[in-house]
Amino acid sequence: MGISYLTSRNTSDESFFTGDRESPWFLVAFGMVGAALSGVTFVSVPGMVGNNYFYFFQFILGNVVGYLFITFVLIPVYYKLKLVSIYGYLEERFGLKTRKTGSMFFLVSQSFGAALRLLLAAKILQFAFFDKFNIPFSITVIIILLLVWLYTNKSGIKTIVWTDALQTLFLISAAILTIFSITKSLNLTLVESVDEVINYKYFKVFNWDHKDGNYFYKQFIAGILIAIAMMGLDQNMMQKTLTCKNRWDAQKNTLTFSLILAITQFLFLGLGILFYIYAESKNITLPIGENGVYLDTDTLFPNIALNYLGLIAGVSFLLGIIAASFSSVDSALTALTTSLTYDFLDIQHKSSTEKKRIKNKVLFGFSLVVFIIIMLFANSRGDVISIIFNVAGYTYGPLLGLFMFGMFTSMHIRDKWVPVVCLISPILTYFLSVYLKNAFNFDFGFISIAVNGLFTILGLLIIKKRI
Image 1 (cartoon, helix red, strand yellow):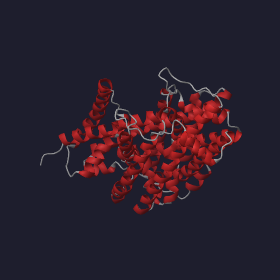
Image 2 (cartoon, one colour):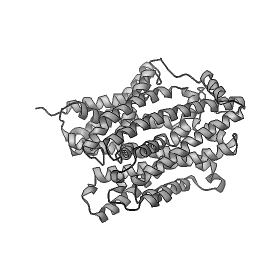
Image 3 (cartoon, one colour):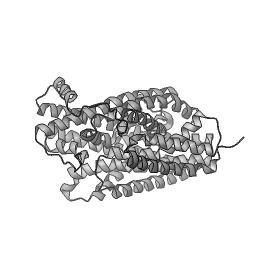
Image 4 (cartoon, helix red, strand yellow):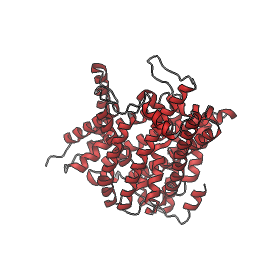
């Protein structure tokens, strides 16, 4: 609230959407780490090690390559066009219907992504705090959304650039303090802990079974494409980058961010192995399904941190997950508001009073949408991070196809048919995925985003204009 008060002074009509394009690049880079991690990485990544080993690191390596594409290909285009909503590029290249189609896929993707991220954090806060006072889960979610609304309503992205940095600090500090608590409990030095992690049965980094969803090339290529789609083609992440003063600062921001993020995700994977080592040494029973896989892996971190590791680990975990719960939704709500108001409501041509009125209504509306999605998925089980990336394969695939077709071809298309192509592509991807799984036991894994993007490109070739 204090940060919100300080950043909301001397604001303009555009502060909520652009941060007046004066954010320090290093602050944006550090803050984006927290937004990218959120409660999903904080909790899901350590837990998923039990079923997926260290294979997620193959995906992280692909992410690094994807961020290079964003830095040197996408950012120069966005700054050249002076975009507020990045889907303005699609209008420049193809037409208004294409812009609205791209924006609509983002709105759907981000609404579900933000809701699922917040769901995980809210469940943990419910378990740790609100159940003790017999407060219903729905009220917990309303309290979080209300607090987010209070500090983002006035200055939006200008405030979030700073609050994200604070949230990142808590997230990373919580992970480091938890590692310290585990190693102390196991009577291990730092060097001994690293040795234990490397030699543990779950430390398998590369998978060369081409039918498996965790096959190296599937994970690596999916890492590249999902990084491009979920950051470079995502209004939420790019809106922060576009608050930097110029293109050079924005590029330094993404390069720095990608490096810090990769190191931090590796840290969380290592933390996951430490949790399983700890559970094994303390004879902690973990729920296992009939097929031999661990169930409810998202509860591993909170269970051990809150019930076994003592006060420091418990408090640091709760501070981390509180930071995660806010970082997962504040910038998402701002980006959703920006995309709808710029891409559909033409807010840039409204008066100051009208801009404020529309912005407030849209922000409240998306808060309500996120609340509804959370309540619909409140009883879901499994690791949320896999759900998010699998959903992303279907919702971000058309965006990937549209942008790649626009940037790497000079063809023009019939704008009015773009919505049809972008709706058919994920449907075809789904049915092909089911067929290959049933007929050949071949799992797309996260690579479904590439298949979806290719279907979109093929559809765009069909509707190209004949010259």
